[in-house]
Length: 198
Image 1: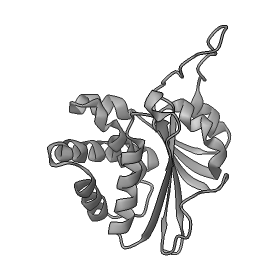
Image 2: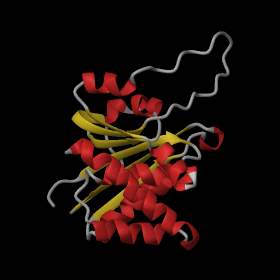
Image 3: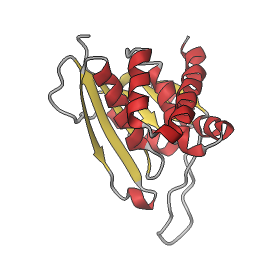
Image 4: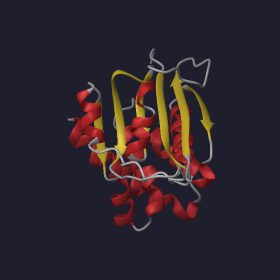
């Protein structure tokens, strides 16, 4: 492979970001590569920001990615894409769900506005931005909790990991009762991203 891939996965507590990052690491291992994963939970239990670093390649020495070196940023909502944009290298890729989760406002005074036109802003900075309706897709499949895997499916279209490796990772990470749902969510997310990528 030669290259080490750096993926930062960001979202809000309860969105399954860590499950998605573990699945990605397992897929890389199934491909015969080294993979390292590290996460920061923060105040995830209260709807706070959650971020996970995943690195894979022939040889990986550290699980952490420095600012400006992320190849792909997985963002489960728009504000998280902005929050971690400084990690993404010039010309890097954002794969994001087209949803907004307003942060809890605890300060006095008016609530600050939620950022508008996030994908357009990031594209204006020279980034490749793939926006997928992961939550909507998950709801259509019957369970909004698989939105994280639908978004992972979209992310997978930009990574050099084979279908068999993804299949093995999903089978290993998911409980039998939710396996088929997540397999469908992954496939749906991948199909949504592929036409955009060309």
